[in-house]
Length: 335
Image (cartoon, rainbow, N blue to C red; front, side, top):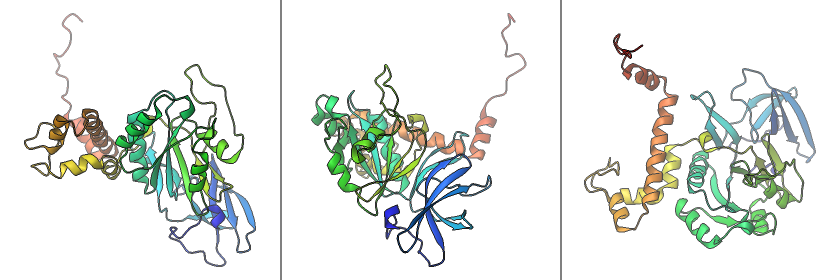
């Protein structure tokens, strides 16, 4: 089962007589599950999903099979999530991860806001984030971009790569050893599929380059790949900033520098918005912390509050009740 990414971090036992497999791809009402017996022999099952199955399996899930169908989804030790399009629930993108590769292109500079939010999602997943700056062969002043990334995600390892020149590919390959499950998190056109091709020497589905210079490859589903290095890599479709899920734990990890400064604020509930004795704003005034960094933190906190309210029916109802009702004479006199 190690060839499928099973490791000591997984919380379930492999009991004899119980068929356990890993979801490799979900397409509509079906999903493919790969199972491996004690002899190492593998088998792929085409499982039909029940409309009421909960939790709904996703790529990376470990599942128990009965009569060649999914009977149970094992407890997830980590999960990459985003807001559901319905605005209330949370959608799981991939499960049982060790490493979240934050794939961000630098051929046109570095999108700091995107990197910060990817880091928040990664920390929230329960896996370890790892920054992969792609398209370095077409970037200018790479050293400065690396420094900017390091300030945006303190404490997270950063690697520059190029699918064209091969820069960083071998280092990335060493991370994908047996027992490791990784996922690539990035926007469309970030170079995720090109990265996969460089790692494996494969050729996935491609499309033409757009006039805006977006990537050549398009991932259209969530799929599990087993790498020659022994690890497992999950490739998911590119996401937008609007798709990102913000959580307080991920915010605390991503903005750990602001958290350390905040420990010296005069008041424990300091909002860092003109509060008396605010150590964070003092650091901005002295130049120890960039104002852009503080503004990013404020923006994320605002998004966090907004998302929490959207997921809470009570808050939504309270918001509707707080809106003033129109008065009978509140109209244009010329109408």
